[in-house]
Image 1 (cartoon, rainbow, N blue to C red):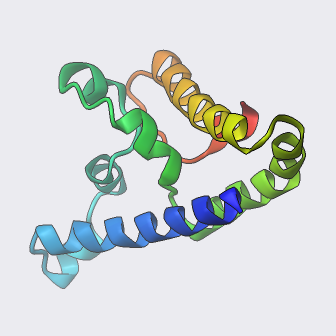
Image 2 (image 1 turned 90 degrees about the vertical axis):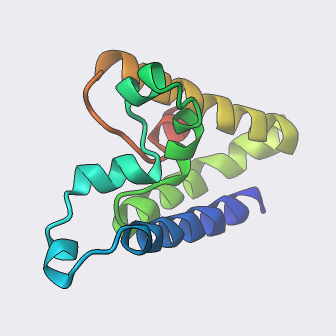
Length: 130
């Protein structure tokens, strides 16, 4: 049940943020096509160390867990979670699994920021490998 909620939330956040990018800033059709992917990732809240440290945007450690670069990225993470998380949830219980889920994601984003300071990252890989 928790994974279904996470899946739906990730899908909604992904679609909402794509619409938000094009609605807040008025772009012509040509400009929409040439919008830099890295700028859009930054705008929707990807994990980016300079923004976390300089601008104190701590929320990026959590928001990046629910953001995905494409539907295949989202689907791959969901499939990975489906194959592993049911066993873990049955073993440790729902509340501990939820705590483990969020802490793994946050720590994964912290480690990604330590080793790749100028690279943006997003997705639930830290959760999956947690």
